[in-house]
Length: 101
Length: 134
Image 1 (cartoon, one colour):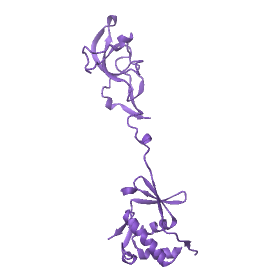
Image 2 (tube, one colour):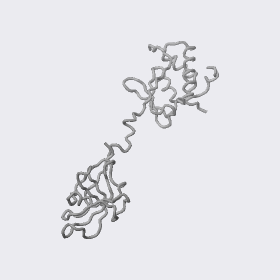
Image 3 (tube, helix red, strand yellow):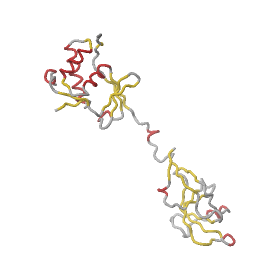
Image 4 (cartoon, chains in turn green, cyan):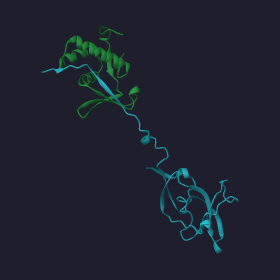
């Protein structure tokens, strides 16, 4: 498993086969196109996930995401780094986000 | 600016599963639309059903209207019938003197509406009929 410091400089971008929509005040990812295991499903996001999803609509590094989170949310840098690294790793595994080469 | 409280990112996946009783309609509930238009409205006809060999003019054919003591004239009306209804291949002759067969054979598809009536259409390609789903 990669350490946060190793992935912090790679760039990632949200998979365009998922569209973010707000339904009933809740952020939801709607799979369109090739959504893999998420075909025929909806993905409800909490506020933090929604923030990161919007952030990664453009290609960014984990370091940049940490800075953006710290500017908007009350949390420690280590907590943000840990959670964002987990977010990236798991999202990569499900092809929700993709590494930009 | 007051900062929001950070909660680790979480996502909940809701998977939609097709209800087989709704999605798998198949042919059930599909209706054929056809017009009872075989022959002339001002003539009456003897209708026969092709027998088991499904060939017109053979010994196993069923004299449908004669057996019922009736004759057929096209009503010209559109009808809808379930695809599983009793559609049968057959033919008809115009009734001549004494109710005998006269003229040339007219091949038709016969819908008997569960054996209660006789409707005939000239459109013999059942696959070309319009269908609707209920």
